[in-house]
Amino acid sequence: MPKFLDTNILIYAIGGEQFVPRKTLRAQEILKAGDCAVSVQVLQEFYVQATRESRAGAIAHAEAVDLIRAWSRFPVQPMSLETLHAALDIKARYRLSYWDAAIVAAAQSLNCETLFSEDMADGMTIGATTIVNPFL
Image: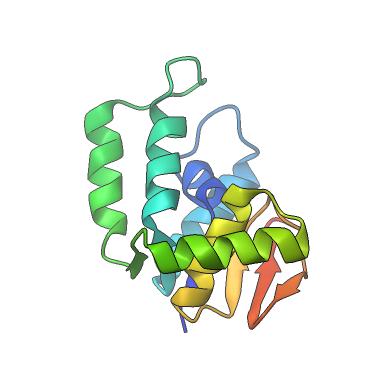
């Protein structure tokens, strides 16, 4: 069963002086394990955050594209109307932001039991998906 990755895992994985080294190492370990899944939303958010000119350690467009292509070897949940509706239901029921709810919905659509995220409540279970902060 793949583990779904929130955007912050991908951002930490590229490293940089602004991050705690143990977080970068942990994110890289998760990716090396290979049993990962992402969504188009996560890849889009990664691109925007990683290449943002105001970000310390911003990477070039070409590097971000290469990383996205490499991570596309994992199962990738496409954007769909079904995922949108599921996200809206999750948002209303669990009081998450829409964007976090969309990540949970994508994880569920790929049957991921674990969603690695630093941004959501560690240990929270939504349906069959449990949020795990891998940096604790």
